[in-house]
Structure formats: C-alpha cells, structure tokens
Length: 216
Image (cartoon, rainbow, N blue to C red; front, side, top):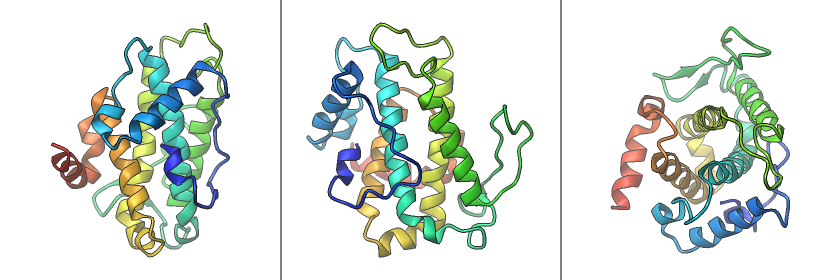
C-alpha cells in the first residue's frame, strides 16, 4: 500500500489520486493498510467479509496506481527518449500504445511517452464517476470489471519495464525493497481475483514464480 512510502519524498509521475476521507472506500483502504501491516500479503489481498468485490477492486486499483506513480516517479530521469526509445520489458516484449478512443491504431513510441499515455489514460478512468463511483449507493457499471482488468494489465507493464530496463537504477536509489513489496502485493492481488491473463504476465514470469514460492 502507499503507506509503505510514507517517509520518503512524495515525488510522483502524475498527481496522486486521493480517496475521500470519511467515505466507505477510505475505510476499506485503511482496512487494507492494517492487514498489509501484518506482513501476510496473501491474506491482505482477500476480499474482507461482507464487502463488495467491485469496491474492493476499485480501492486497490487506485492504490496500485498511486504506488506505481511513485515508483516510476523516482526513476523518470533514467527513462528517457534516448535510453528507452521503445516501450519494452526485456528483448522479447515490446508494447505499442492504443486507447481505443484518441489513438485507435497501436503506435510505437518511447517508454516515457507510452507510460505518460498509459498513466494519463488510467487517471481519466479513475476520475470518471460513472466508472469508479466514490459516493455511497452509486452502483458500479456493468463493464467495471473489464475496465479494471485493462487498467491492471497496463499498470503491470510499467512494473515490467522498471524491472527489465531500470532495476540497476532502482538498486542505486535503494528502492528495491519498496519495488519488490509493491509488486508482490500487486501480483498476489491480481492472482487472488484472476484479473490478468497469464500470458500478459510472461515478461516477469520467473520473478512471479520466485515471489510465490517464498510465500508457500
């Protein structure tokens, strides 16, 4: 959760998305932070008893956006047009951007450009009250789960790019513990609710196996 980063500089790539204090979603976020503090991530990602699955996924999706925002914010100076002319996760995986609205045909672009498109697109989805309602009693739309899955699939690509292309910078900044904890939490969450297709996770397959085996 974002409380992991509490004592550090608050440099983020995009503005932080806040969950309104006093709302039910804020209470859920506090519950998640408390269970995460116990150190058992498998348990921390489980749907709390009596809670709505969509709301739990919404709260966690916002939090992962904030975490990745912060993690990528720490390495933006190393992720440039010249260092990362394509958005990749190692030599075998390259991503082209399309959002289906403004850019319909996938375009090849640099990693910083791709991540800017991606995080701006995610932010637009999170700010859309019809998709991510913050008021009590407002129902989630029928397509909520498919939108959440697309958001998480795309956020995974930022983790994959950081691990493959910038892990040396992460280590120099002594951020690897934060990155690993954040990614482990993310992976356990998407596995718990089957939110990302296994093929999409292939660029970090070995790391995911390693994180999972340590926890068995």
